[in-house]
Length: 224
Image (cartoon, helix red, strand yellow):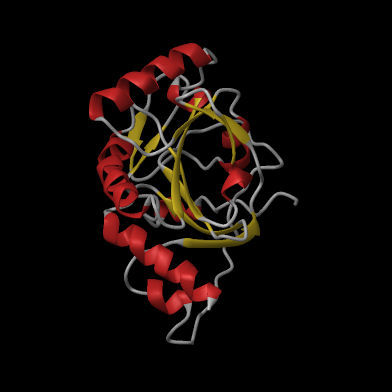
């Protein structure tokens, strides 16, 4: 799949990028939903601005309308492999047949930190169902441009242990996943359906468990 149209910078001015963290190679700067800058890769998955007007009252669009804002992607996912905190090699494609919340985050990002209790609550409720959370920490994002994957891993392990989070955390040591799914900062949340189609992009943090449940409801509407 070729490169998908990148979000226009005009969206930043319109305030659609609230509740996120920008990242430079020197110091992270908070701004309304900016995100970590990385060199552009032609395989990167970025959203189209085309959206359905969803006239059916039971459509995914009608479920999300006037509740929460998500960008529609509707493109096949790109696979990648990363290591979890137990040293297991995990592929995104391992979770075909499940709804996947693919979250990109960093320990230094306040909105990421604020989002994680909601993710933990959601994970505890749905982990035995057909839903999974994968929280991906990429080395270059965690270190604001650094390359020491061991240093990034230590920061992640200390953070997860401190707060006792139990959802799966993946170490994107070589930034393989970030080069595909990067936006302009973190947190970035993709929601992938059971067939491996990236349905939605949430730029910034989820506000709570309800918002996560709403997007699951929208995805389930496509299954009917």
